[in-house]
Image (cartoon, rainbow, N blue to C red):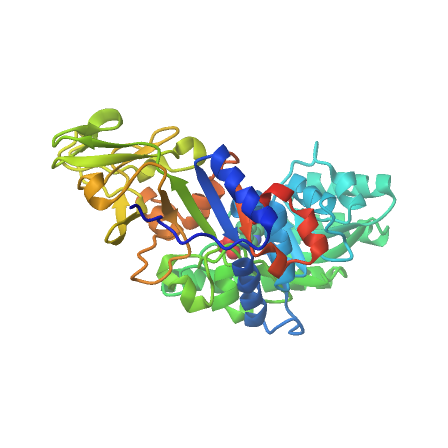
Amino acid sequence: MTLSALKPWEFSSPQGKANYRRARRLYPGQAVIDLKSMRDNMRTLVDVVGGSNGGTAVMGIVKADGYGHGLVPSALAALAGGATWLGTAQPREALQLRMAGIGSDRCHILTWMYNSGEALLPELIASDIDVSVGSLAGIDALAKAARKVGRPARVHVNVDTGLGRNGFTERGFQVVLDRLVPLVHEELFEIVGLWSHLSAAESPDVLEFVELTDRQIALFNDFTRRMEKAGISPQLRHIANTAATFSRPEARFDLVRPGIGLYGYEADPAMGTPEQFGLKPAMTLQAQISTVKDVVEGQGISYGSTYVTNSDTSTVIIPLGYADGIHRAASGFDDSGSEHTTKIGGPVRVMTKDGPRVMHVSGRVCMDQFVLDLGAPAVELGVSEGDTVELFGPGRGEEFDEPTADDWARCAGTISDEIFACLTSRIPRLYLNAAEVLSPRDVSKLHRRQIL
Ligand SMILES: *Cc1c(COP(=O)(O)O)cnc(C)c1O
C-alpha cells in the first residue's frame, strides 16, 4: 500500500472538491494557497502597527500577481485582514483590481512603475488609482492626463533616500517642487503622499545597514520639511516594507507597505522564522510523481551527468521544471558527476512507508521535469507513480519534515520572493478557506475554478 505524501486537503465546498480533481487531471503540479493564512498574516501586520485605529494604515503589496499567489485572491485576503490600501508596481495590475470589482469605496490603490509616454494615466485617474511620480516627464504627463479626465490626480511623490533606484534625488528636488506647486494650485494634483523605499531594512543586526536605514529615515524627514516649506504638505508619508514594519517603529509613519509578510515569510531568514513574527506561509507547492524506475549504481542523472547514483536505487520524475518556475539553480550535483562539486539540490518531501522523507533534486532541473534519486528501491520505500510530493509548504513542525520556500531559496541562491513570483501561470492556483475568509460577494470575484 502506498501512502499519500500529504493529508488530503479539506475542501470548503463541493465545487472546491471538483476544482481540485480537475486541476490534478489537467496538470501534475498545483499551488495550494490558504487564504486564511494570508488574512491572518495581514491581521498580524495591522496589529503590529497599532490595530485598525492605530493611526498607521496598511497597504497590502500585491504586485507580480500577488508574489505569484494570485492578484485578486491576495488582494481580497489582505482586505479581509484589515488592509485599507493595495499596491501594485504595474498599472495594469492596479486596473485589474478595480475591474475585479474592488472599488474606491473599499480601498485606495497605489501604482508606480510606468513610462509616462505610454502608460494609461487617464484610465488610472478615472479609476481612482493613486499614481506615483518620480520624474519630471511623469509629472507633466500626469498633469496632462488630469486635465483630460477633468479631475485631480491623486499623487504620491517618490523620493530616493538611498536605495539608488526610483524617485527624485535631493539635488533635483527644488525643480520638482517648483513644478508641483502650480499643479496643486490649479487643482490638477492632490498631493496624497510622499514616499520612499528602504535599501537594507531586512538586516537589523548589521550595524552598517541599521545606519543606512537611519540615514534614509533622516533624509525622508528632510524631504518632508522641504515639501511643507513649499506649501504642499503630503497627507501621508510611507517608507516601510515588511522588515521595517516589524523592526523599525519610527519608519512606520502614516502607512506601511508590507508585501512578503502577507504571504507568510519574513524578509530575510536571518531575521528569524516566520513563526517568530506570527506569520504563516500561505502557499504549498505539490506535484504528482510521473514515472518511477530502478537504476543501477553509477548511472549519470539528467543533462551533463552532474549527479551519479552511488548505489542501485530508484529514481522518480517530478513533472515540474524551469518552465514552471523551478529554478535551474536548484539543481543538485554530487562530486562523482562531471561538475566535480557537491551542491545540494532543492528539497522535496516524499512520503514513504516509514513516514515523510526529504529527498533532493538529483542532477539538472530540466524544462518540464527534474529527477529525484530515492536512495533505495521504490518498492522498499512504498513510493509509486501518481504519489503526491511536496516541494514546499508552511513548514509544519520538525516531525512533519516540510521544506519551505526559504529552503528552495537557499538551494537556488535567491530569496523566497523569487521562488513564488517565478512560478508560471501553467501551475494551477487553488484556494483554501475562501468561504471562511471572504464574503459571498468576494468569493464570486474569484475565478470559479480556482476555489477550493
Ligand atoms: C515590493 C515592495 C514593497 C514590499 O516589500 P516587502 O519586502 O515584500 O515587504 C514595498 N514597497 C515597494 C515600493 C515595493 O516595491
